[in-house]
Image (cartoon, rainbow, N blue to C red; front, top):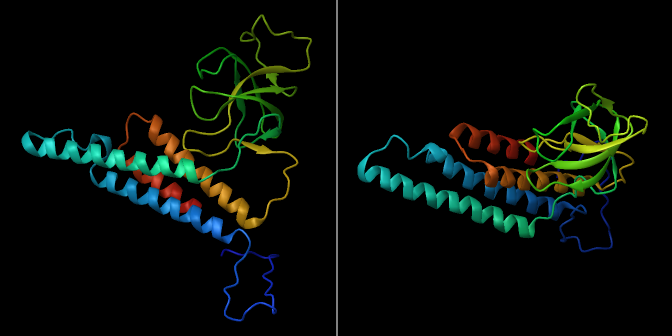
Length: 234
């Protein structure tokens, strides 16, 4: 276990001396690590085939064999992800009704869920938003309400009341690689290992979401996905 300063491991002397001492949450974290390893292995095999570009440039029977192998490996990654999505619950992020702070970079507020819809304004880093609704078109899109927006003259919709202290619109809560752009305010304390499990599970399932939605899975993009999993599991 990756115990850090301030954590305490207590051994109950009344238990059998041959019993294995286990920190609460350790078993769940180990399961999440195994899940990350399964996904890494499936992605590594697909990378060895050259990603979704692997069959291009080949000719004749070799091209047919390569294409068949590629379909098989893509199916294996999809199967692994399907299993993990059932058995690996992740952190509920972002939670509906909860308040979050914008993190990493300003959040651009759009009129609709689509990332190219009208620009209404932005919320600067450190300012607050409340989650109203999860999007369906792309991962990480959420509808929010905020009273901290900077409205952009010339872009503001006629439907927005400039006198109102707040506006509602759509922002991204994660990047395309799964990195979070919001941090929760007044977050209830979670045991260290359980928090680590939830975080790792979110990265694993986020990678699966990227794999499902991505049209081009080059060797370099698969390699970066594996690196993210390695960093999260370490």
